[in-house]
View 1 (cartoon, rainbow over the protein chains, first blue to last red):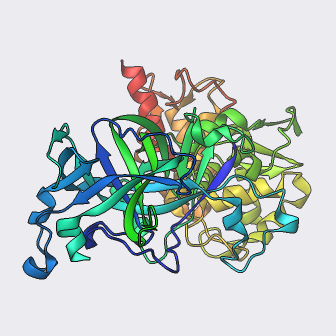
View 2: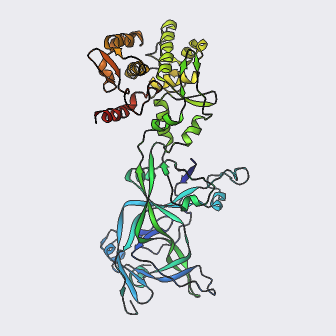
View 3: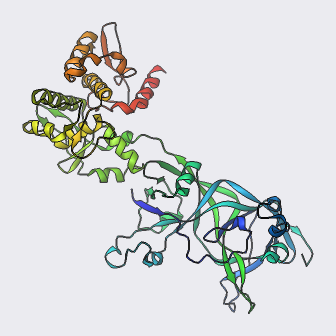
Length: 155
Length: 343
């Protein structure tokens, strides 16, 4: 029965700038969004150099920490997710009853980054099996449980 | 930034290549460990081979998450909604200025739940350890060729739980294999230990050098590791190193009484009076007066007014005689047997 180490989160030295409200920010910048249905994106055009497809935007209409203060929680009750130009989903921010550990395979490349001052290249190479790591512990999620509704052009 | 969140909104994009992440639901006690200043090392034990790249993606047939002392079984639960894991990034599209964006980088159709695994390690150990049964000075059993570490590797429990079970069954490494002594053998070795202590004036109830006992039994041919296993199991929890031992009085009393009964599993029942006498003669002089059937509550039956037998007798899961004593902390195990019988 093979035993695989599950490494603990190691916060990145330079956290990415996170556009989400403070509450939803995590050291690694990971967050969880849950929605009913799927997001269909067109196949990436071959001319595009981008590796992502923009699909819309998240709007927190009543999130105004500079007005209501950072402790205000009423904004959590309403989040809009505009998909494309004409659809909108309404959702909310919820605390997870049991927080989620986001688990990913630790890439071999990561192992070469000398984390604990141990060089695993060379002699250890063949011995290093698959390893997993907890990338983040996420305690909140944004849930869109309702069907999308049509909206007109400018939101 | 406030403008973005309020009016303009946070741009949302989806990565072309969604990655494989898993979401693991954290029970409160595990979360507490992870949040502590010194989180313990975690590992996943699974039956799938580590080299295959399919292990992580495929539904695990049987996988457990281990902390040093606890074990959780992993169960996959399908989610009805789409769950995206997003990453904060800086993105630019069509020559625009890069803006902070939330990008979906992974999608999860299932989450993993954790359930405490409470099967005692001794259940697994009883299956994999050959019985070390000394009959007329000989042991007629072939070893499993496995070290303690090899045995633990195949048990879907944490290191701490394996170790506890290992001590409970008095398991030991000897001649390149791992073994579990029979009740008869335990009794033989214990009697030898007790006799040696008496003749060499080794105070079992106080601190003594473990080697004094081991050396005194040198010519008896018992595996040193077995003697050590008994002294460790019967010792105080905080006195398990540095070559010293000190036996715990109530643990020892219970062990001797229980082992006496279990060694009789295959033969006639003891007469109660005879049993009490033998028990008294089998413990250190100072503790003779401690002999009392209450000590063995739940571990014996009285089939008649005058006879007594181990409660393991008649339990289907315990084949007579060859089963070793499970030791004192296996109380629940005995209760299970008891309940099964009452039905």
